[in-house]
Amino acid sequence: MPSNPSRLVLKAAIGFLIGLAVWGGLSVPYTRLLASLSETVVRLGEHPTITTITPQGTLMIIERRDVPRSPTAMQFGVESTDITFNVILLMALFAAGRGALTDRNVFRFAAAAVALVLVHVGAVVSFVEAYYLEGFGKAHGGWIAQHFWGRAPYFYSVVGAYGSAIALWWLFRPSSEPSAKQHGTRRTSRAAQRLRLKAFSLSREESR
Amino acid sequence: MRIETQKKPGLVFVARFLAALVVFYVVSALGPVNDHVVVPFTKGVVGASAFLLRSLHQPLDVAGTVLRSPNFALDVHNGCNGVEAMMILAAAMLAFPSTLRSRIAGLLAGSAAIQIVNLLRVASLVSLGEHHRKYFDFVHVGVWQSIVILAAVAMFIFWSWKFAEQPLAARS
Image 1 (cartoon, rainbow over the protein chains, first blue to last red):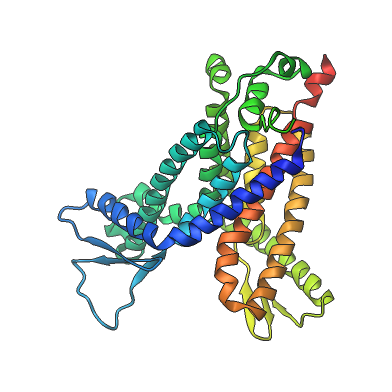
Image 2 (image 1 turned 90 degrees about the horizontal axis):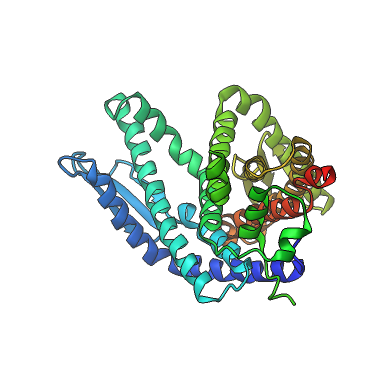
């Protein structure tokens, strides 16, 4: 067990608040970036390119050039904040770790954040493809594509957003070298011991 | 495979965690499971939240998964019933080396704690929607979703340090 749980909670809470401020403050510019990247990725599978993703605040409006615009037609939009909120979780988790402001931790967080951007792009693409699937039915892709895209956005919304942030934190957070004392404290399997050391060597030195 | 497991336990954990998450999601999304387990469970969450709010003198109607106060209504779906946090906790506990007994005990205790946090989430969101509607979306998406999942992660950390693989230690 971490030697100072209250310090851990405090650090996670500070990370959470910073994450909340960053997410709230940068949502509009980040939506522009996300719309641009997602449009590029969606167009990779189109010949000719027909999809346009237009940012409006934190909303991304999806349109097709092969479908004529009509003032009465409904528009399809994806709310970017519903996709990107997991950055708060990622920041809180990185902040709770040992040496949160060390270069190593900051660089690792930056790498995880870049990977999270790719996850966000993947999520937007899944929403676009699911929308096309709904609109164009069986004409859009084969059986596997239909089932995959039909369920991917819902998966992301329910557990994928959280799971991806937790997985990236786990993969990118700095691991620490086990000390002799730590090795001798408990008889657990090496895999469990290394997992603990990677994920939860929380401020042993720091909290002293 | 064994060598790989020892060399890259973090990677193996993440692979197991994500695989378990996909399996749990697929099972929970099946029609019969959703209709006979998830929806009744969600109705239970809604009923408990209504009980909590009524005990705080908040007038409230309940219809299925919908909580209705005089100026606001909240329909509780997957993602707001705490099941997603329980799935994440279960996936992490399943991916982590431990015994079945430890996992079941951890999951039961962790799920109960998650539902207590979730109860506060639903009740506070109804109250917020009723009295401060303009803050609802921000708090709903940005604050409570992260808090519930952070609670699940915290419970997993506690469990993994305190209880996981205890029998191995006892055997020595």
